[in-house]
Image (cartoon, rainbow, N blue to C red; front, side, top):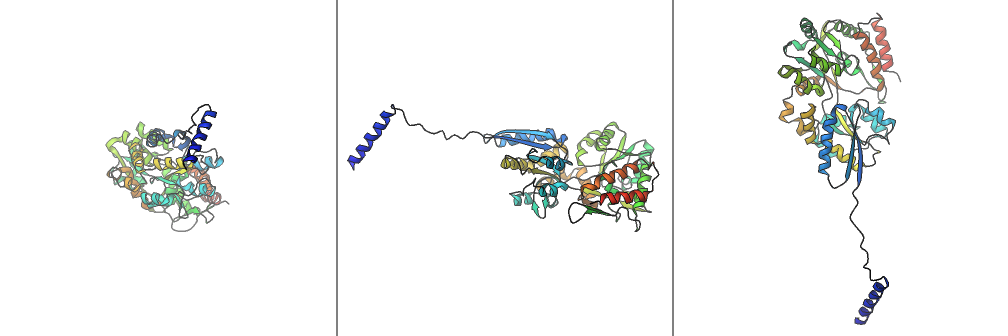
Length: 409
């Protein structure tokens, strides 16, 4: 045994001498830092907030990768169309409205969430349902506040005054102020039809719509709603304004009340201060009765592109953006209502007039589920009503054309 060991030592010495006495090289096991490039799409007004969230994400995972996160502004309402135009070239992480989740999942743009149980337990049921398709979770809930209600300046209206749209218009006219609502957006126009018994929604195919807004019989007919809209538009206090125009009117002092959502809460509070009021939508006069104005509701979601080159890191970033901490931060910075249960139940959120108004309006809201052919025909009709129907065309004819276009296959 000793002889064999001695021979082995001699052999090793011979090999070392043959190599010029060099020591055998030791492989470098230090892993090279991975470069992770992620593109994030979000609302233009969210840029400062998102940059702050990106910085905290990179600090949290410092040393695990070399992160290069690029923000690009992209409307949440049109995210689906842009993304499906080029899935492989689209953002890794993106914000979008919940009514787009079915189409994105069907097109392969979203994969089911791997840790769905933890996401479900942390977020409001309504938000989880909005982020799901047939019970499968496809996105991360971000907000549970994508609806609209009434803002009003308490210097001009009492809490009782704002229960009726006609009363609001009357008082605003007396003060030389405006009441704003965007009739160029079918999203808001639903308010007049939603609680009348006239219906619109998705067929079982999940693509096409049904629409009875042109119904010529029943307690409230389509022409009754159209005539009410014309009466509202005829008020000197009424103004059809886009959301940016509404906010500019608030800031200039020309607008005393208007329909909008929580995303404007901070800016309106800065302008009106303690006079800022918020309430459910008012009733309006239609067919000899007071009809409670309805609303579409929904959530904002964060999706992870199924074609991302860094799916695990993209998912981590999506979770970070929608975490309890960052949903609280979003409320503080942007006034948006959290989908996270703990954040939503915080005293600060519960004390928000805008959130309280949204919750009050939720009794009269409907989750937005309409196909793409809903938007343009309704907008065309409503814009004509806002202008006072200058052509004098038959209201029934216009409603028939609207219903046919909305229901087209």
